[in-house]
Length: 226
Image (cartoon, rainbow, N blue to C red; front, top):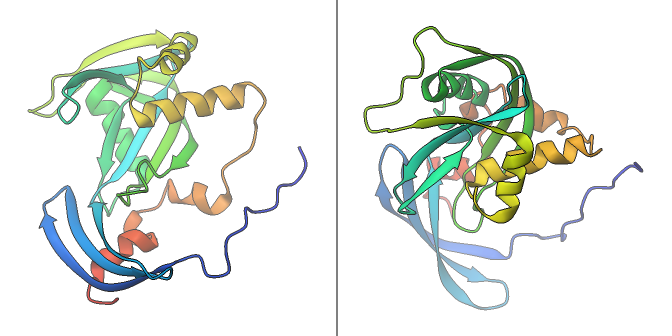
């Protein structure tokens, strides 16, 4: 494949001049603020930003029969049941790798001997600063104690052939964003797209977010600056 030039950006990409920022809500999981701004076109407005305190992490775990480990649970905001890959929220002081290894054990009662970064994405960049790290894990083994969900979690575990999972994504049956991206990313690799994650991105899978905060996440520590 020919070398790809970086996608271009405008000379001055940020069109907003922030007039004020106000923290509206804060809890251990999310925080919400409202920014008032002037656009360089002359318009004025307000922007609500949701900040996630934890890093979104997921793992596409494949067994020796090419089956995907799926977790079933009720998703409260959607008021519907969802089948998805094991996922969790990483603390600011733990790497995505440390987080998802723990979550695979807690949610599915499994450990994996082979891990590799699979995909990185922003799940909802119009309103949140959430960053998502997705892994591929193989050579799976059961933990002696089985899975250990939290007190407020009721989880079912199921293994589904990868091809069936791909079909369920395309049909709209599997809709969880992390699961959709992970399954499509692996399919892309299997069909010849061998592009690797950029080195600087891949390194972050094994680093604590506090060591390299994104500009959006770093902003929460300096709301007074406009």
